[in-house]
Amino acid sequence: MPPSTLRLRSGQASLRTGIACVYIPRFAVEVERQRRSDIAARLVLIGEATVLDCSLGAETSGVRPGMRMSEAIGLCHQAVVLPPDAPHYQRRFEEALDVLEGLSPEVEGAGPSAGSGQALGTAYLSLEGLPVEPLPFAEEAISALRRRTGLRAAVGIAGGKFVARTVARLARPGLAKALPPGEEAAFLTPLPIDFLPASDSMRWRLRLLGLETMGDIARLPLGAFQQQFGPEGKRCWELAGGIDNEPLLPRLREETVVRRLQMPAPTVALEAILMGVERLVRAAYGDSGRRGRWVRKAVLRAALDGGGSWELSVPFREALADPKDAWFAVKCAVVRRPPERPVEELEVELVGLSGESGKQASMFDGRARLKRQVEEAVRQLRSQQGTASIGKVVEVEPWSRIPERRAALVDFDT
Amino acid sequence: MVADTGAAGGPGRLRYLNRPRPLRVETGEDGRPAAVWLSSGRAGVHPGRRYAVEAVLERWRIDEEWWRPRPVSRLYYSLLLEDGRTVTVYRDLVSARWAKQAY
Image (cartoon, rainbow over all chains, first blue to last red; front, side, top):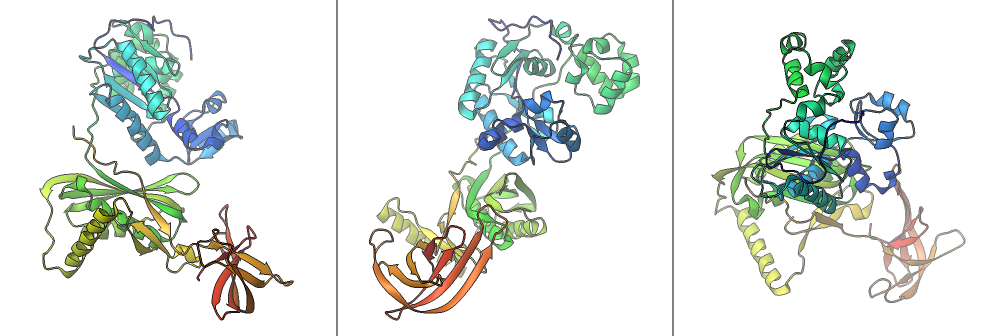
């Protein structure tokens, strides 16, 4: 990456507006390394057919996100290749966003769902109206992220998202840099076109035309450039000239109910998985956070043995208030697409909680009455025994040849 | 912005029932159990009493999850003891330890 001629400030800055981009380099690799100490000092490639993310060492060998995995392995054949665990990365990224939301009310996350490897671990914070100087604020963001998530971020501060992200990508992890207003074009001019959010084919064509830097693009007339590259070209031309009016879109946090269950041993048995999911669906429906509201969707996740995860989204045809109806829909979906490897932990998340009140169970239903009686007995036991845990026996794999796998005790509330 | 109520504590946990309990076993020359030490109290607290094995009623082997780092390979014995009781024990063929477990 060529040295930038910009006058980045790492001391006091007088910016009171603008955007801070928090960039966590090699986000997926870093979170994988946090949970797997055995790859701390190894070259790491994450991806399947193509590389989603790679470690610094792999990058030095010429690997780039988006490259074909076979090509990447050829470049660094000693690397550990991991399947991408998008739900885990998303969860960890949400944690990072939670930390940042403690610093700024408007935080936008360009997480793994954005699809591009470069978008992993990038967040934007609005500095509008904040009663603090931007650089100390950015340093606090870096420090809070390091302290609470163990991740090292760089922060770039500028008037727009693209320039802020470019500043952050050029800064060393752990440092914050601010670009004074009006210097965007000068800052971008010597930088290579790789920073632009252009498609591979557009980059290829740009290089064929001898356009290697953003300055090369910004010097061309917009009309001619747009004629060649269409709307994508117009956007890149504007960005290369430091024109960036893309607004910050703060994340909307949806109210959800989450329940998790750790399996005592990794299991591939569909019946055991279904049993766990059923318990979780019922427990999530019984969660006080639902407050009787209807549910529009259930998201199932599983941590798989040997790394990786499984996720299944089950949107309901209509919002459901009854866990039995939800369980039926969820069960059908799981049977159609079960996890392909042994499951270590299951999670059920209920999302799209609607404001409507739930359907009432019949007062004359015998099972409901029995359930209420049991719950009342448990409540009384708890009041007598204090914190003593109360469990119930459930069949896990009743057909198993391993006797201790056949039945288990599960917390009564699960 | 709505507060997230999602983080519903830590994960729930399944605790398997009928877990194997370590057992002291004396074996004969053929490797079969000749005597077992059974305790009436909590395992490991009391050394227990020695019971000679009158007969091996049945013997079977299970090999499961051989593809995993810790495969399950056990040789079970159903034993008739000198006091007329029957117990089921197994020898873990991976760790070479004995355990008692109802089958």
